[in-house]
Length: 348
Image (cartoon, rainbow, N blue to C red; front, side, top):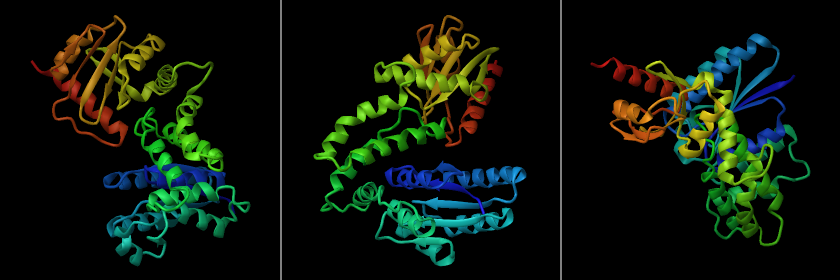
């Protein structure tokens, strides 16, 4: 029977390492990522809703919810177990964090091993159940991730893993909340680059030297350019493709709302040029600080002063949202910002 995998994993090297393997193992797979806390439940709810939608199209496919590099509380485990039973999905969790010991004792589908990182656990699980990587092509990269994640400083691949750790933690060019699929693809592409260099002499140094070009190669569309310009063009294209769901309004003016993108001078201006039907671009970060850009269609200095006690130039300004409530769900951020703007506009 065909199997569809719904894979939730952590947001560090180990978490993406697990997904790097499953992406190579399964043809039918949807991936999700979460940090600890309420985001885990939110992503599991997303998965449950996606399975329900998919079942309307095809009920004969076996569905597996795979969770890696994340430990669940017993409350979270009880909830997802009931939901999986309700929607007819199987469950498997592979983790190595000792904080999950009570949940591991409670649930048969909860596998815990504190002596291996989640990527290594996932690798050996895939080998056992799916005959994955019979030629051991992925063995070295898995060992490097294991060495750094559980801190085996004497391991010969430890230094290589250290470079990879920074490689993933520093990959912030796209932003996983606004564009999760593209952000994940970016990070997995760098793990792929690391896999291809791991057996070379002085591999840690070569990987460190190659990171800049590895990032650029992902963002190149038509021609080479500086990394900042390539990222701006790539993100601008995404903003344009998704602008229907990113739209906010201010006094009848349409704007595109980004979240934690940064580099507003380049990306904001590029977005305005690419979308002449919009009047302003706004990027808000997790602290509620925002940047505004326009292209002579709206005085964003006045807008910034109005909504965020800010200011600046006519086409480039910024401020801060009072009482900003952050979220790892973009739609919640957009809704909060729109309601905040509406409230400001309705004040006398």
